Image (tube, rainbow, N blue to C red; front, side, top):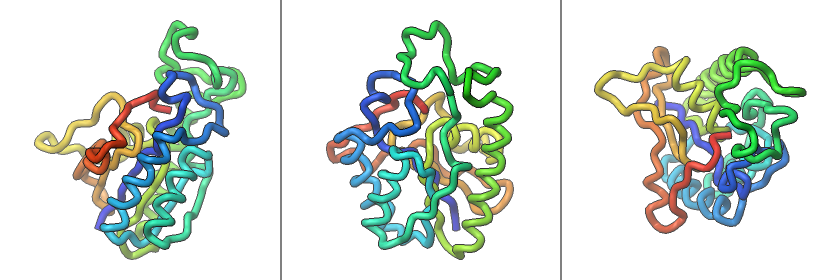
Length: 203
């Protein structure tokens, strides 16, 4: 069996390219995306559901919970990188890409600290999958999924490549056991019916 990593649905600040505060909810379009991916996941009959408790991820997970009947277990290890004082600012006003900054912004998290937390989040998901005894769905954030796939999974040369940014409600799938071979990346086939894919800001 496998682990599915699911990025949250779109938010208004995603679309506007604004570094998101922690309490940012899904937009109407994001809610529609969440409903679409929930139906896709329900057909897979997952055994457990793990999520970030930040609203944009939790609302996405709640759509999956409604479609599957599974309870949502949340953990702060699955939060997006904390950009501190940069949150709420438009990317266009920064003059740099905050996702690549190694230092911690005021009140935020350094890249090294974020990567250390990603390692903990990955281990949490692997343990949760083993305990569930079946398919685990992890609903979280773009940067965390991207870093996890890049640093803790195996991307075979003939397999899917990791894009620079992941789409909202995209599904990435890895093998449950080490080396956690990547089976699919950034798949948005569930959005073909109208709640079209969008990259937005990766955070």
